[in-house]
Length: 269
Image 1 (cartoon, helix red, strand yellow):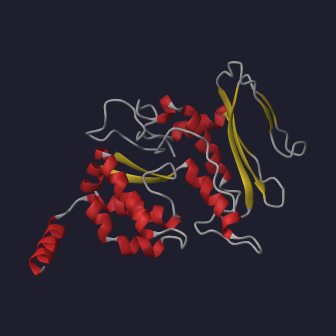
Image 2 (cartoon, helix red, strand yellow):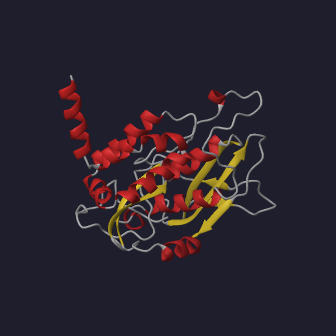
Image 3 (cartoon, one colour):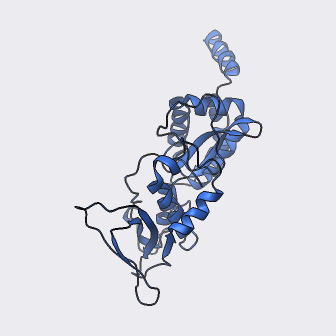
């Protein structure tokens, strides 16, 4: 029994993998996690993300401090690392490969719901053949009609708003193609074939609108219990059914990046 314990201890000491690093700091992560998140479940998700992506594991091994920073941010927000809630993105930094943590679209929406002030969140894109109208002071919220049988055309607008629990509509965010162009211009590396700005621009437009809406709607890592409203009755996040997208402004290709875009590719913040 003693021999086995010593062998295990030596093996753990020699294990310098990113997953071992995550386990080493599990107490630190558990300390900052919101109360409704089970630390062991969160840790399994984090280590699972590292196992699924050799590129991520390589960046984490070469720059472990960047991994810890990203994971601590995910833990503080109570979001699942390596998922659509919170992306773990390998990128080439100034000193070599590193890990960047980014709150995803689903994470932004989840934090809005947890604050307990909204009953629903709407984030959509408008295409050139859609019917769209929104005039502040005239419309409470955008009027958006879609002919699903026809070709909708190119992206022209994106918008987002929340319906508060009292039925009121939050500030409405509307971004034009010019607004998106400004965001795209600031997105270093967006011209890379690995960037979703190139192969999934819709996801990046939606991300931009959701990020702006978060400035006007209460957000919380912890679930806020409203008077006479049990936690289980709070509405779950209702994210769009989008492919996995990461959104990094200054991403560059790491040395062992795959030869074609996949669901771990990066976009723009």
